[in-house]
Image 1: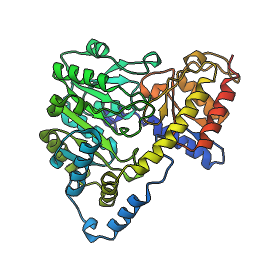
Image 2 (image 1 turned 180 degrees about the vertical axis):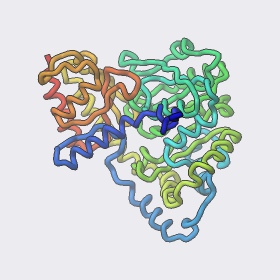
Image 3 (image 1 turned 180 degrees about the horizontal axis):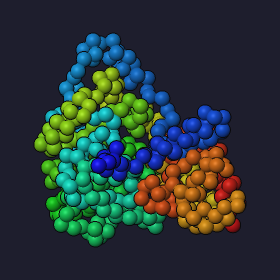
Image 4 (image 1 turned 90 degrees about the vertical axis):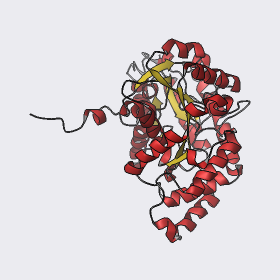
Length: 401
C-alpha cells in the first residue's frame, strides 16, 4: 500500500502569504528589477543601539552559552510581567509568563494548549495569515466573523453572537489589528470582553501592536477592561514590532498558571529555551523606556497619513483610516473585472499579480486574510519608497476601464 509522503495535518498548512510575497519581491530585486515591497510587516528601522549592546554583552557572558530554563530567563519573565503592568495595567506574576521563539510560537502554543479536536474559535476577518494554520494544527475549527470597510473592520457583539455555537471555546481578539489597522475603543473592548465572560469563553488576545496607535485612538487590553476574565484570558505579545526586532525572534504568552505550565511543557520538547542572546536583547527592550518607540511611531503616523491620502485618490479604491499597527487595507472591489493592460483581473489576487508584473510593486491580496477584494499594504518602509510605490500603483490603476 502506498502511503502519502507528507502527513495530512502538515499538507493542509498553507505557506505564509505575506512572507511569500516578500520573498518574491526580494528575488525580483536581486535580479535587478526595481521592486518596491509593501508585503512584509517589518519596520525599516534598525534595532535601537542600547538593545544591540545588551546582546553584544550577552555574547561575552559564558552563562549564556549554555541551556537556560525552557520557559525563559527568570529576569526576562519578571521584566515582561513588570512591562505588562506598566503598559496595560494587567497584574501578572513572572510564573505566568512563557518566553517564546517569536510571536508565532506563542500563537501556536496558545491554541495547541487550549483546543481539542472540533473546538471552535471565533476569528474576526480580515485576519492575520498565521491564525488559521495554528488553529488547524491544534485540531480546532475556525469560525469567521466577517467585517468590511463600512464598519472600519470592527466586529460587534451581535455578529459574534450569531456565530456562537455549543462548540465555541475561544474568541480570538486582536486590537490593533493586522491586516486592517482597526482599533477598538475601550468601551467596545469592555463590551466584547463581558460578552465573552458571560458566554464562558476563553479569550486569546494578540497585543503585539499595543504601542502603535495614532490620532485619538487608545489601546485597551481586554484583560484589564474585564478583570474577571483573568482566569480565561491568554495574552500574546513580543518585541518584534514595537522595538524593530523582527529578526531577534522573541515573543511571549501570558495566562493562567495551568495554561502557562502546559505550554511550557510543550515548548520544552519543541525548542527548549529561546536563544539567550535574543532574550538578553529583549530584556533591555522591555525594561527600557519607550522613547525610541515614540520616534518610530511618529514616522509610522506620517507614512500612514500619506498612504491613506494617496490610496483614496485612486479611482475605484476605498481605504478606511487605520488607527493602529502599520497597515492599510483598501478595498479594490470596484476595479475587479475592468480591463487593464489587456487583462481583466477578476480577483484581488489576480490584480496583485498584475501590479507586481506591470508596476513592480508587491502587495498582499485580501485572499490571504480571508476577505477577497482587498489589498494589504504595509507602511513600515521609507517615505520615498512609500510615495514612489503608491504612485506606481495609482498610475497603473488609473488605466483601468
